Length: 362
Image: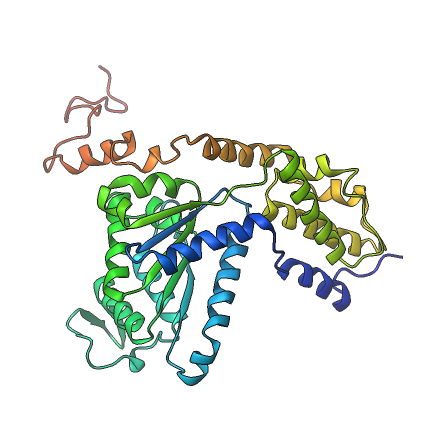
């Protein structure tokens, strides 16, 4: 008889595996590059950590946060206002939409200061518009408030996950303009930004020479299908299977090619896949993880194909950001629309008075 899937022992075992951080050589190498850029390169204001979906960027972010907090633990105990690292996510607000106001508010919440009554009097309230009993805050005022708080709390690093949303969904300006906003914010606040996102950030950072000069781009790649990489990847798989604490699991050496192809060499994809397989095995009351569990939890072929296409483009150095560059057809269409005179019709539309009228013979 199978055990209930919501049994506390079972759910805790899956949770423990899902939240575990597995260290491996590629992750260590990229983390070292990020820390070197932050700590040893004074002219660098922004560090762009780019990589495909599922490679393990979010796990690396968690490790960076843990390291910084651990390094400054004693100082934080002595000074409760000191916040060495801030971690937020640039959330998309609908299709290709991004709100800078929400972005600033999330950062203020992360600093523990989301309320107006906690804000000092030095902040100019002239940009606030009142509607009834509530208050509507402008983006510019929120930004100044955030700059003030970043300086007051002496934040060293601000890590922004899913940063590509800020550039793909901005309502005005091109990617270079959005980068300039962040660069200016970092300089005025004396904080270093770590922008984590998809491979498109690698293209967008070169929108201006000044921006490229003050930025460092670090690419987090997958394990390749070479003998050396496969050996390391196999050790990662083995470590994860052992951490499941089940009665047994398939032999890694025998099925290494299967594990690699089913996760494309991406540790993040591997972990998510194995988490689902573990949950399925426990739900069925199995005492060991089997190939049937792995097959049932595997990613569909079309999903793997989409991810592999992104991986291939990134590894070949192809341009991924054409849809967001200022010379793209999308931007040109928007520009031509913005430059029309009042009352002027869109190109291709029928002249006024010449269109076909329903129910009227020609």
